[in-house]
Amino acid sequence: MKILISGASIAGPALAHWLHRDGHEVTVVERAPQLREGGYKVDIRGAAIEVCRRMGILDDVRAASTSMRTASWVDGDNRVIATLPADFFEGRAPGDDEIMRGDLARILYDRTKDGVEYRFDDSIAALDESPEGVQVTFERGAPRRFDLVIGADGLHSRVRALAFGDESAYLKHLGAYISIYSTPNYLDLDHAELYYGSLDRLVSVYSARNNTEARSLFIFNSPELEYDRRNAKPVLEQRFSGEGWQTPRLLEFMRDADDFYFDSISLVEMAQWSRGRVALLGDAAYCASPASGQGTGLALVGAYVLAGELKAANGDHIAAFANYETVMRPYVKVNQEFAGKAVKSFTARTRGQLRMRNVMMRLLPYMPWKNAIAAGITKQLQRAANHVELKNYG
Image (cartoon, rainbow, N blue to C red; front, side, top):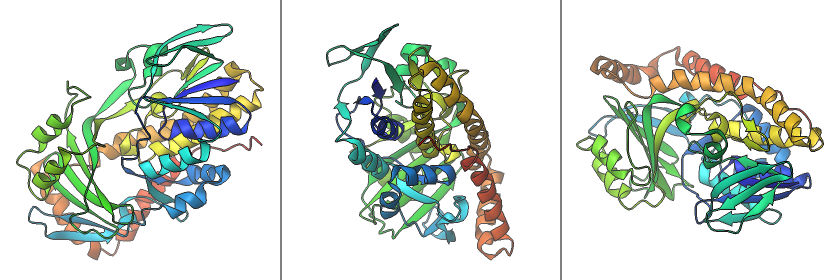
């Protein structure tokens, strides 16, 4: 079949890999003018590790690992409150790994670019479905017909809007916003991350790409905001104006950052992920938000399952889409439930909570039961990361 995928982040290229392997003619369209290589460090756990192994990219993932060693909480004067192994709060089990989102995007793109058509600096303007296929109108390119269209284009999916309607019906705001962008590693962090918390706010800086650069992460609590998503830097600057620690310096770097990302921490909840010849994948269908720590896992596993079910159904896309949902929904549900709980732990919501957290952080390295705390976090995340049975689609 001729299959169009919208989105060249993680889910789209991962799906393109499997579809090309199975003999389909695949096109990926991406609004950005080139591959976007910024973003968070992302965890690859459980079932997603096995998917990477089956894709043949696990060695590449290991080679690009962040190899993060320590995580430290600091106060406004940059005094260390506590330092712990980086894995302590991350819930990783032996064999799991962490990689920069942009590095994973590059690995997937390099693996697929020779067999898949990539169209950057373009996007889908309209979809017109008929029994023969889907006529796609592009913002820039000439119209083309495809057998299937897959929206892997993120939280604010254009394909979802065209096929299912306004996103307000599907997005569930979890009460916080998040921002990330690249900065110089001016603090000379050595495979380390720093966290500074104040009331309703969290700021983090961590080294990236073998300490050659860093990422600045901001989280703040807020009801839903009205703002221009194409010009969100003023929102972050206003929310963190006057904040302590390294915040003023980090905001200076923000002004020139070309990989600036800002969005709500939200879930996508939908009764169905397909309509006719159009289906959704990854964040477009079932975003679990950064609070889950599982967005990349859901993208990788979802791509594997969707392609596998298309293969198993011998081209019957209706059956394949239905089976894809049957396999993925329990996995999505447990990860979204985890996100709803986890987001509440990111920031202190009262001054009492802030004082108590700082006290607990100071004591934690010396607590004899700290390993039990880490084990509890790991147990919850591993349950979510492995809550899917990966079929062997051949």
